[in-house]
Length: 349
Image (cartoon, rainbow, N blue to C red; front, side, top):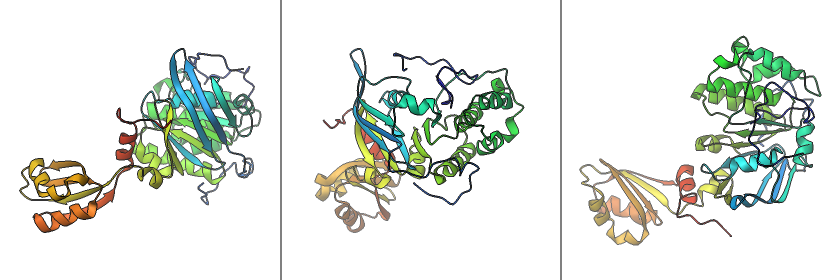
């Protein structure tokens, strides 16, 4: 699997390009942060960075992606979520021209994926990929930089990816998080308009993860568009303009964090009840509102009630029980995500 998208024709080779299993051949938020590439990044345009329409990808009888629509606007950050096997990586493969769609259309930066990649307009950080273990980090950067159509500012890339202290280290001695930072640097070398990130912070500790997203803020400040797949839902909530969720290859939700959270049924009422014996006692106390209960949980003196009638439940707890410290909240993104991709969930037609 390639770890970045080079800004050279497909015939060129690179020491950072790994072998990728390919089933078929393939021919904003604005922030006032300075960037060394401000002059090289086009101003946001009306043409979307990615426009996917009714994408279907099959492997024999297996439908990996099923009539998927996806749109990433120029300068936007879109989080691409779904459980393992949902079709995220397959979709990314098509966007990056590693694979052809079985049907449907895909445009990247107003042209075909093959053309956008060949022009060096797309950078990618993927989950895996071979990096020459006997080269130093600096050697890999210099060799790949020499292959670019435009001469990149390697030092700026080093600083952006927080690699200053790693330049003399052999790639084979780098940790998983350090390798991801190197992959990010390689993706930034072509000065791309679009970044496609598949689990970009995998293996990073919290400090490195925060630094990574600070780098992404620099990129979006200059109009770059970002599509990222992640299993860290808090990253999606914190950094994405919109969230797109797929399940079994099909779109199940798309919108802002608040819009996606609103898809969940009910709200959560929390409280403290000293001496609560368990779930049975709680349900007895809430019997008048039983029809609204979607779920209850008791952890010691702490209770959580999922309900479609939070006012009724709160009133019963306050007037009919010794419960205190009540709180009412909308469902978390994690709760809604779990609902949408549960085995019982049905995808829209």
